[in-house]
Image 1 (cartoon, one colour):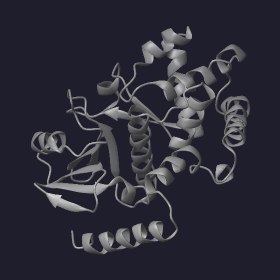
Image 2 (image 1 turned 90 degrees about the vertical axis):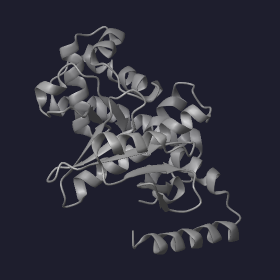
Image 3 (image 1 turned 180 degrees about the horizontal axis):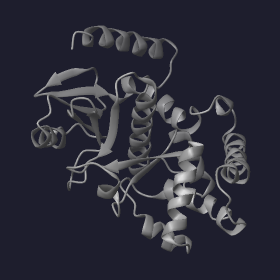
Length: 268
């Protein structure tokens, strides 16, 4: 809490810089979704950027996946379709069984494909929070899948003909970016933190759990500024506070909810 004034001051200076350079912050954020996830896609023509990204994915499928596991060529040919399904899906969990049915492969093969794709770090998964964690408690539960950067998500959507940046797509990319940021934090900070999602109807997008204390911090990513979902999650999980990431002008705390501007969080 003591750092909030300092962060808000830095954010204010950032906004001044945008004005001085005559840059439109929402437009710059949209461009970050499209090309900011990789150094080699920045400031390139859209078609050229995504051509290089598709070549990267093709190389991962043909070279990296077989290095982890011996796949039949027929199953390797389904991987791009699988990535396309993940990129085009609406926000939320997805059933392995439904994916397997869509690609006409067995659920076991689907599980192996997803597990191996996670090892390449093109995608990562977030599992549901259960009262007692463990492999058995996750068996049969749908998981959420995200790409390591929203640039991959949008590149696949673009390649498949979905080029519009409507509110649904924007919400999907925002959630992907926040989830990817949390995923990277779990791999780089010293404290052990796990990420889950809330299976409750109208639940929040993410649950951050301190592995040492069990404390849970609910996080909602929104295009609107409603904090009701976060407040309900705070009560259910008896959390000290929750986080709402949306289009605010600065960081502030109200009713145990930390409000964070998305344009500030994006620099995390």
